[in-house]
Image (cartoon, rainbow, N blue to C red):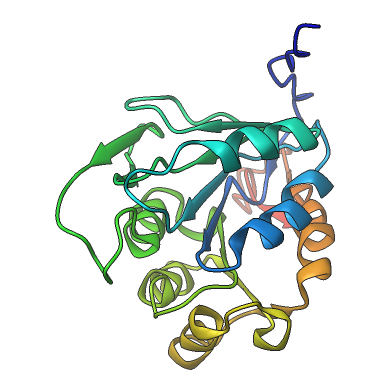
Length: 226
């Protein structure tokens, strides 16, 4: 029996814009359980792209990607060079490549030296994504060893983005969450099972654009968050 192919996401356009444009997740040791808790909880019509960097052996196959795609409602795939970043897809960083987000919202892959003993490095993704998305980026640090991601999460915070960290007490390995909390005044520290519901809520926050024009007050284009 042939495997069921998930359709390309068809996101219903919103008249205005979403407050956030992208979610970046960093995870290492213990990551399989964490990702299998979060990603399958996202709906098929999830309105944002999700980019995941997981520390992997250079010779790893794409089992995690294939397994997550199989058990999730949302599409899960490995990052391709120069690929356009689209909503409603979870992108997994390939082993042995740094993943960067370019200004035109495409991916680039790099084999430059390891950072924080890792390639792919969470910091590389977070810092490049923060440069592109600024305050429209959500950064998430999950279970893992060493301090990879803490510098990048700080960059996200400095650019006005939102920062989430798994509660170290619920992480299989608490090194990365602790380092992130020590480095940055994070916005949310959450139990593992609390992360996906909050991401769904945040992803659907919208900016109401005021289309009224008033030459005297020059209020056109101002908006409020819903």
